[in-house]
Amino acid sequence: MVAGKGSRVVLVTCGSIIEARRIASRVVRKGLAACVNIVLGPVQSIYRWKGKVQSAREVLMVIKTSATRLADLEKEVKHWHSYDVPEFVVISVAAGSREYLAWLEESVKS
Image 1 (cartoon, rainbow, N blue to C red):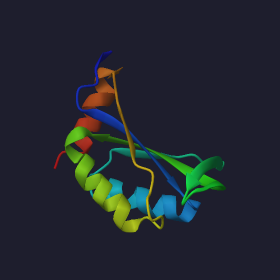
Image 2: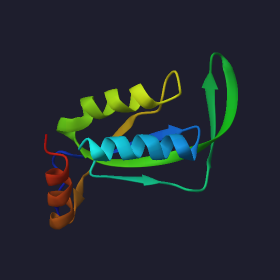
Image 3: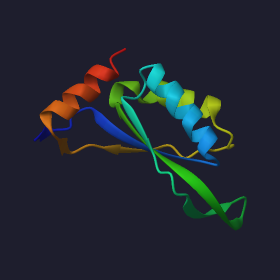
Image 4: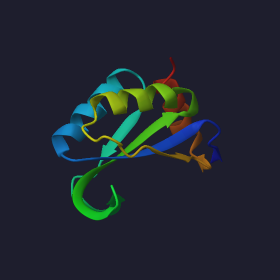
């Protein structure tokens, strides 16, 4: 196990599995993400939007990338996403296996 350094996990929710698959394929093909996990069962989201409490079934994407690719990744997600304000939450990776983190970094080199 080694320190995560520049490795990041990004959470993004989508309104449909089709949208999630389209975004995931694009960001991996462009080298902005090493891997995207799509949670196949919907998540129930309860949130405040335009002054009202809303509820929606959404699809969660877990995107693995590096700090250096975050700006381009966010731009790509926003471009293809159907929401006015898509979720884009970044979590720093504290540590992980040496091999996995090396693969992640190699996969997203610009």
